[in-house]
Image: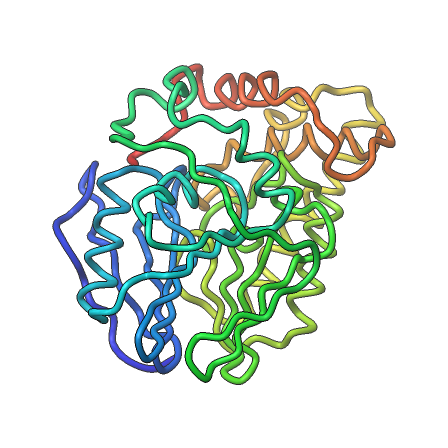
Length: 317
């Protein structure tokens, strides 16, 4: 990893530190937003000779405008291309604030985003000031791989091959520099979340990432890391698979199973209530549903809130 980390702007809601721009390879930058909890994601950007390619945006107008300022502090060139790693609003709500950019995403990312809305989540996350935003889905889609050129740099956009965090996860791979923008296939210091994708698919996705042999990884949430993060997340998902198998066999509900489970070291991670959503997805797979099939998200989030003591989930977006 080259270059120092630079802070931009003022401390954000709840006393969190300011976002940091980290140069992960020459002309390639991670935009890391502390502390990586619900709706506080990472983004990134690649600087070419006369234009910039962005990787994801942010959840609110305020956060996305701060991202735009961070890009402008590094390069005077316009952002003409924007890649979405998946459809979730923390990575895509700010798309509309890049009107000059062509937006690229997986075909299933677009399919979901067409019917997506911004806000209306107070019952789950409490009041959030989303700002003046509208959904802007990808206008360029692909199904397997798309090569993108940023100046002389070839960038590979790869569908990970299976439902995992969502049904349309894309990684941004810089093969010469061995740098990977992993989206939410990897969390660093936060609990992985596969409710809208697949537990078994997430494990397969991690193996696909491992085969790339990245030297530097920009996770969807948390600090820039190395390939050791693959093993860490794999350890959680493998452990969760065992918890789900035993509880499912015993006829215990996902919420009951979560409440009876000692999280051990995983309890130190952000958003531990995601175990409940993950168990809902794991149970669906144990019941034989195809990977990524729709399940009752309202019930799963309701159970996460119950596990969390009945109040909204922690959100400082």
